[in-house]
Length: 114
Image (cartoon, rainbow, N blue to C red; front, side):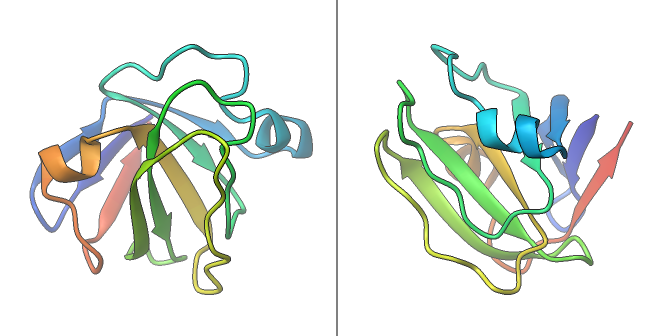
């Protein structure tokens, strides 16, 4: 899948995978040594994430059911957790610095395509 920021007319990720079962949501990015640029993990449904046992920092986009970014966190370090974002329908985990490099902001609308 691909993630496109329709507001900024920019690609967020060329290779996104969806974690949409209890097992895949629980595992998330655990066991990986990195998340390469251009890749992402979509955790659906999700309102909060943690980076326990992870070895690298990530950026997180909290997105509502309409594709609007309602919260974001940049460079979430290992062994941290995010607040519970009530309005979020799903979370997109991205390589650190993706939010800054793509100038993504709260209120931007995303499109996810296969």
